[in-house]
Length: 270
Image 1 (cartoon, one colour):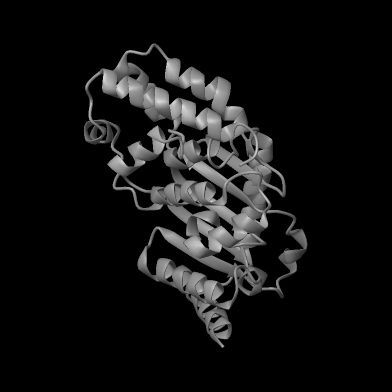
Image 2 (cartoon, rainbow, N blue to C red):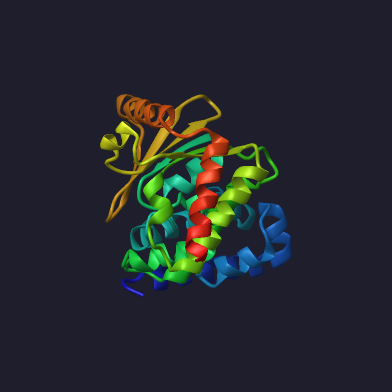
């Protein structure tokens, strides 16, 4: 693993464990207090996962550490880990009531199967551990199944994404089967495909996500080959929303989109 990210995360994990044990709190009790699994607490304490801001603030208070855990994260860990492991966007997703996602190169991250995301992350040549990034993305996906009112996800995907070879034929067939299952089984997940013949394809320059928060404010995320940026400027977000609406206007209806995905899925099987 490149850089000092592993060391910084391990240090934070050790301090978290020492503080918990000093207070006589079990992992199970901490997990219950934070509304997470005991296995996730173990990942925190071994440095394999970094707790989000909300959980660190909660543990600082529980352990009487006066903000030390948050400061360790901000001063040592934050600069050493990629945006998906530690950044504002996962927190934005957790607060969103709606997510509006456009992709022209790969399946949206929240809809990816584990094998597909592993292939994407490995091909990205990240200076980080792929398995840790897979774990982080799987954790992000839990936002769609959380008990407390998960967000609606409206996803617009370019038809070409269905034919991009990511991980080989089996991975692609399984991924498209997963898309069909999600599109048919959850009325809060809408997947629409923009056909290659649509004139609006000329405007496909990059993928983006818009999150609508419970206060009605929209925040956007732009991803590129090297990094990702959270966009809060009102005019910039407005322009992205206009683009999303333009793409959706020329996308296939929901059932036609599912039929096209199934067609491409069968092609990958043969």
